[in-house]
Image (cartoon, rainbow, N blue to C red):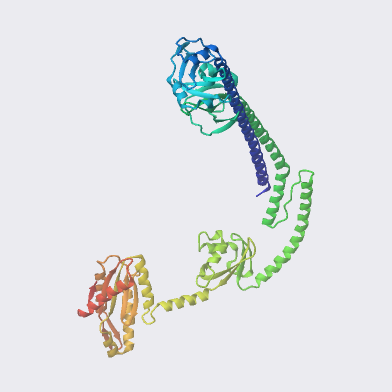
Amino acid sequence: MNITTKISVFFALICLFLTICIFSILKQSENSTIEFENQQIKKSIETFFEALKTKSFFLQNIAYEHSINDNILKIVEEKKNNTKKTNFIKDKYTHFFLFDKNKNFIYGNVYDINSDEFVSTPNAIKTFFKTKEIDIYLDKNRINFITLDYEKILFTIEKVFKNNKFIGYVFIGRSLDSLFLSELSKITHQYISFLPSHTLIKKKQLNFDSNLIYYDISRVDEYSLFSYLELTDQFDNSNFYIRMKMNRDFFVQINKNNKSIFYIFIITFIILIIVIYFFIDKLFAKRIKNITNIIKNISKSSSLDLKIELDYNDEITYLSKKINQMLYSINLKQHENLKKQRDFLQSVLDTQKNIILITDGKDIHTTNKKFVDIFKSKDKFLTNIALLDNKTQDNLVKIAKKYDSYEKPAKLKIEDELKYFTFDVQKLDMQKYLICMDDVSKYNEKICHLEQKASVDELTQVYNKSTITTMLNCWLEIRSFCLIIFDIDYFKNINDTYGHFVGDCVLKDLASLIRNILPKNDILGRFGGEEFIVLINDNSSNNIISIANRLKKEVENKRFIYDDAFVDLTISLGTTFCIKGESYQDVYKRADKALYEAKNSGRNRVCFK
């Protein structure tokens, strides 16, 4: 990684780090704003309940005033259901009921604010007094609600006494209508509405004057949020809800400020980074990179002639001057030492009997005298090497490694004469290799002669059993073809009559005759004794019988003469068609069986299986 890349990565990491930091700060600011909103909601809820409590105290005062009113005491004491309607104080309370000490209904009045009229007394209030423990609602700190005729009522209950004697109850209630909720909205500075049902998703709790209040918060968008308060209906212990809407003006403003700060920071920081980057890159990074590239070029070319340009008068320039002086001094010494070393190395190479060359894989740098004597020039050598492989000249080292043994020497054409060479490769350093070439032409001729001798039957000069068997197996792997097995009829009589010398001559001349008849692509081999195998390069089974009959006829018409001996020969032939992929054992058994039938049917015949 060069210095420019490192500087780029460094500034990128700084940019990333500071971006994460500012983002974290802004996120923390947002979280703080949300926490501030939560506190504001708590205060609004407390204000709401303070207002409810004030309303409840107001109702309690009214209830107390009625509890000591003479007319009320008279009605409760006499337990008369007075049908005359009492004029209610409008918008102060909406429900007024009297019960005796046994919770029996005496008198009741309900005023509907919306229709501005009195309505009938609900039966639910009578049921409520009969079924509930009323004394628990006499607590001055309680805020109580009840549903009467599908309308939620804030109520209070006061005992009625006469002469310190308990005689009944007075019930005062105020409906939670739109006017009532509007008054609470003005007090809390939030829009308040009534919800008959709701589900608190993330339930929170708040203690207010020994009352445990449950609520949750829903932020519908960045501009508004709702808080839901859970209240209890005393009639059936069910829950109903008050929804308070709050505008998120503070949150919106903070978010706008945060975004503006973030964008300003990012733009300013990017501009600053670009300016600093180009400043450092021009004054330091490019100059250091230039020095590094010059040093690299010196190490690659092994030349100290390059110089570092001097642009500014600073520490880097001073260092560059010293490097130039050092390179100049080293260059002088290096030329002297290199000349001595090269002369000595060349003299050592020239004394070697083998061909030696030093290369980097593409170009030949140094050769010895033996190389020049044989190849005259590097170009002629490369032309010879190119005969081996079209891609050879691209990498001499690969070719040298390929032909590195006596079993696979490289064949080169030198002045119309074929010669064989083996290569030995030694790595000198990171880029140079020493290649030693050994002329193995004579040795290769001996090997070829021995290979030929090992694969050919010494008497008949056709392939021996091992070679013909190997070829048969190879053909079975790659193609379909025809196979002939034949032997000489009554060959033992020839040996017994004329002697083994004549018998050997017969085998030799028969092999020569058959070999001359067969095309070049067909293969003849001696399997043993007087038995021979012929591989016919024909993938049609229709031709094999005619080919075998032609061989039989040629032998039958040929007279073999050896001094005074006149030998007439016949042969029996077994033929078969071999399919690609068959096993050697199957095709040999089939052809041998055909030969056996040819002999049993009178000899001098062709039989096909």
